[in-house]
Amino acid sequence: DTEVTQTPKHLVMGMTNKKSLKCEQHMGHRAMYWYKQKAKKPPELMFVYSYEKLSINESVPSRFSPECPNSSLLNLHLHALQPEDSALYLCASSRSRETGELFFGEGSRLTVL
Amino acid sequence: SQQGEEDPQALSIQEGENATMNCSYKTSINNLQWYRQNSGRGLVHLILIRSNEREKHSGRLRVTLDTSKKSSSLLITASRAADTASYFCATVFAGGTSYGKLTFGQGTILTVHP
Image 1: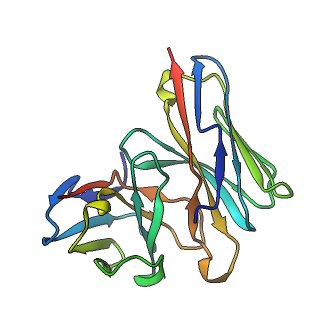
Image 2: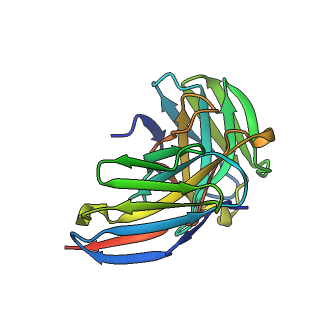
């Protein structure tokens, strides 16, 4: 069982909707990540938070807005998405940005109509 | 852009056989990791090898790292049907603004037939 919990597991939204993906971990990890994964492709890094501060933004379009309210929670706010944004969105955490092992959630599968 | 290239892209073997997957990368790294992903699920960390290590074992897994050739291999011995999954190598950059950034290779799809 993963110790990183993502909700919802599935999300269908229209291009004009506003929705959010949520991620929670209670391992005391201080780095949290959002990855995007298309079918049959590797995960692609979107954002990294370290000690609740955004430390890496991989030039992600502004229609994706991350938020880290506290050390246990990570949100990804979605607005005016495009059909090509449909993908599996994976959240992960690690003890720190400098340490190695990432713990992944099961992902939120997003479909944009 | 993705850092790692893996080969083969797909590997099909019988239960009990060994599976070897290779990964190459381009820049200096802090460490290299291998992850497994069952279809449509999250990734599971398998093993981490640091840049100053050459070989590491964990159960049926053996990982090697050759920093001079910028390559790594993952060997799964005595494979089982439950090992069927996609396997990704991931590299952690050594420095600069991307310090700690984990970048995944293209992955190898392993199918183990009972």
